[in-house]
Length: 256
Image (cartoon, rainbow, N blue to C red; front, side, top):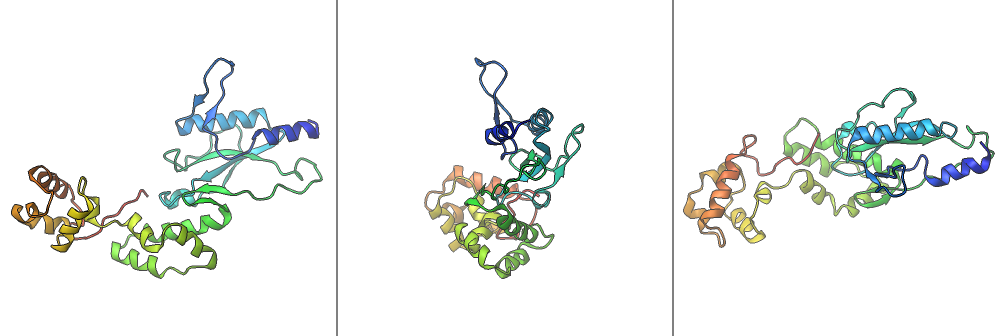
């Protein structure tokens, strides 16, 4: 292929970040929406087979968000080079991450040009450099996924060594306390259909755990403005549905 043909393929998007819409063969057809990991993997392999002159394999891209499990983040950047086999299933859902085509370098294609500069990737705090933001996400997830009491993990998050680069990431997330609330929200904040005033009412009465709320008399809960019989039942049912850590004032909010 000529150098102009190679540039045409590169500019058209081969090897780019995940694309969830692909055009079908006829001009009249609507774009097919890729909704499953299998569809996405198959499409990337099709692109690879059709463009082996500029593509050398598939690269796994983890989504850069706090909600992404450590098992997925640790696989970011891995390369799959067997064109005849499907890539490993590192993600359980597409929102965790997907495989994309990996374009050969200019050097590998015999082109005497400088390589493309590193581009920024989308994240839950805007565009960031993957090589800088990914270690931050891993460090946070390594702590929050520990098999330790919630209080211990919160303490470790607050004491986590923060590099200068990471300070801006924490600020863009709203501060370390907001990150803590994301993973370990207060139990009363998770009770559905309660407004801020009603949650504050429970907190002032020190009714902050499932067991404490379950033990409170009906008249105590009904004394909080806006809580009637319907909300009382909803609160009772919600607390009854909590089976683990019923004496904890925080809950764990994450997928591992």
